[in-house]
Image 1 (cartoon, rainbow, N blue to C red):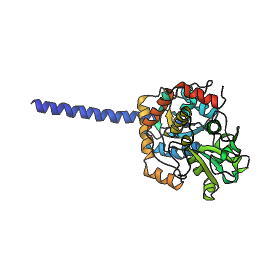
Image 2 (image 1 turned 90 degrees about the vertical axis):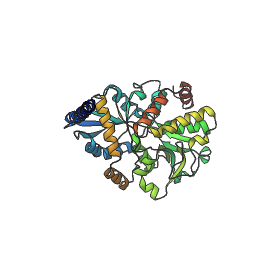
Image 3 (image 1 turned 30 degrees about the vertical axis):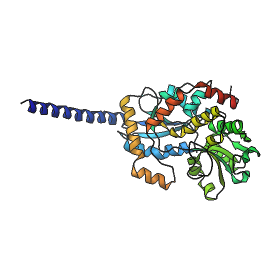
Image 4 (image 1 turned 120 degrees about the vertical axis):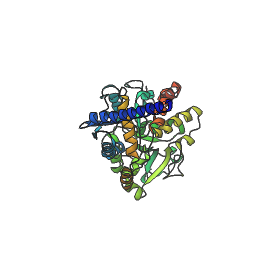
Length: 342
């Protein structure tokens, strides 16, 4: 009798659990049905973040309960800080506002002494579909092939602004290893940077390598691009002989700084949700994102467009944000000193 009773209780428990899960899914579908989910992109239109957002949106709709429409809202400015501040403080906290931040958003939160109104580790990371390695890139017309040659010849680098890695990394290279990059700021987003090179206003820049492959494939096809160094912990697959920036830096403290920055590819084009989002909706977004990223249809379409595509789980993203949030402040003081940031 005891055995029969135990089996009956277990069956009842499992039935209630299954019913609860179905009800939970129904509630999520009911909430999201007919709604729009804003994707706040921390970059202007025309760059890699924008293109990935537009590409991913219909696949997120496919896999999200209730099939809401995902719309892209570009919010470039202040090296990604404008979008991060908005998501953290003003965006809806009910699961209808998410974002794609820049890989250096956690780093920027420690670098800036004013204007930062977010704590990077308090965002809820959702995942990513690529780990864009950064690179110092020049066109062949610049007349240099290595970072060593960049110590003897000045090359104009286009930059979006002093809060961006398009400025910070070339400036650090000048201070740490003696390159002579002349950094011109003020270009509107990465689209403006690429246009500057097309118009011969500049001959180089610092960027995520996957964006170069996505936005200017004809440069690569024509053999016009030279990778001077990779801003990552390992060399680029497309330029295995180019050194990493870290390997060129000899000062121990500076090397730690470059290692911290180089590991930003873990963050990549991180999809995030703001603090305060209900746990069930956050879980649903993470689950839908993983389904989207591993969807054979999405993978095939990305491959056809020659987009880098590898699912990145949210856990290492969250951990890296925590690591930077808790890093020794002397590293960031050193960076501010090297790039003359007050």
